[in-house]
Image (tube, rainbow, N blue to C red):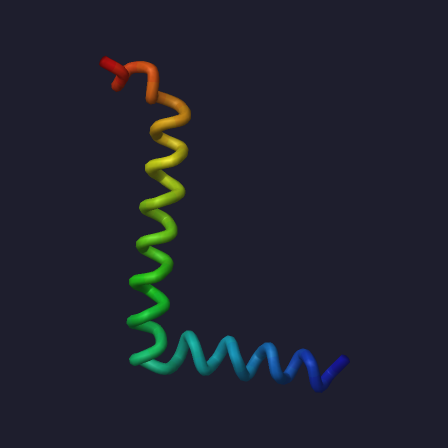
Length: 51
């Protein structure tokens, strides 16, 4: 169990604390957030946007 946790921690640190990886992950998180936000917006207010 401890070995698996160390692998997860190592992966997390390699993705967050490495500038090059973090730049890519930040772009990915921004895109996913925008996509999810647009789905929520259309589900809540889509009837107002219909022609």
